[in-house]
View 1: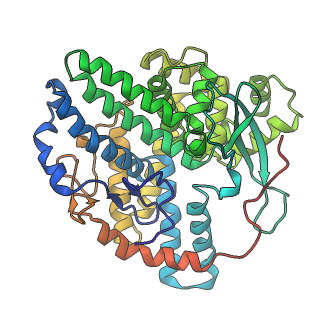
View 2: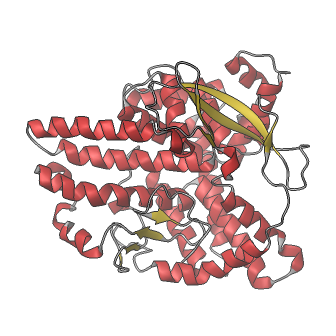
View 3: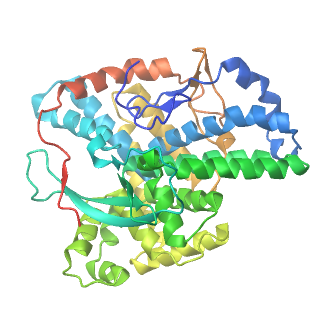
Length: 447
């Protein structure tokens, strides 16, 4: 099942497809998950675990949490609802086969393809030398060519450039949707892992905690995959946070906030005077004007950068400090958490009502479940409680499809990958046929 929607694959352990919403866990067989069922009840966090039980759970549950988070972000946030709407528009055009509607197919193809920007956006220095930590970093802003090859009206894009303390360049990565989505999912993966580890007693628990922290740090400081970790790096550097778990928790919280920002809020936060004051430059400076243009065009990576810059220091110290820091940051750019939530609810409700009339049965089901999940998530806080959400089946490595988690009355309990693929894959194929051989998404004019 080849698909261009699998844009978040770092390895072969598992994947999520943004075209057909299929979740695959290639590294796990269904029988292995079934054997862990007795440790996955609602009271499992109150039970003490042996180190062997932790290893068994750690092999399976954090990976499932990672991929389910991608599903939630792609269906049950403002960004996810807009994603469903793009695919719904394309599906209607695919069904109608009216030429005047083919632009929706092209828009869907562009949307999914640019979740992870083309490879030439990410520069990596190939070296086997030991990379000294910590790294230096710099945020730069560039422009992309339009599909016609012009820079007039081009979208700004934010990059993170990383280097060694001696000035050796290591990598340059865009603050793309993939970076936000991966930070959100990695945060949930780590939260699950360390929650299990907290249930292990004895000195071996402390040893394993140090081992797991070291592994997470190695992942974060792998300069070959900063395309995925750029957002975590950015918040850690702005906060001067050296605790990888705290950095990912705050980065995950911030990523999920950005994914839940509605279009109207992007416009409200694009006040040039406030942005200029935040970056301590004059409003006519091209840098801040690019920031403003990025916000007006709904660039999630640009908003993440702005919020990182606006948050007070020490926001990583605790969950309470993180929430307070986000509120301060939003106030500095002219809005509030309450205002965003109000507008987000309006946007999600409106899109869900539209997609509820989709000719695609899969998209109808996903939008209905997504709207209900959105309401539940608004009261859930930082940690996703998957057993309280509407979730589909996943495909294990032995090609067995199973429901892993889900709430009572799960609306997606019988929704499997084959159903999604069979209905939505023809849409992807038609979108792919409309790709043009034009100079798209090139980057220039770095500052």
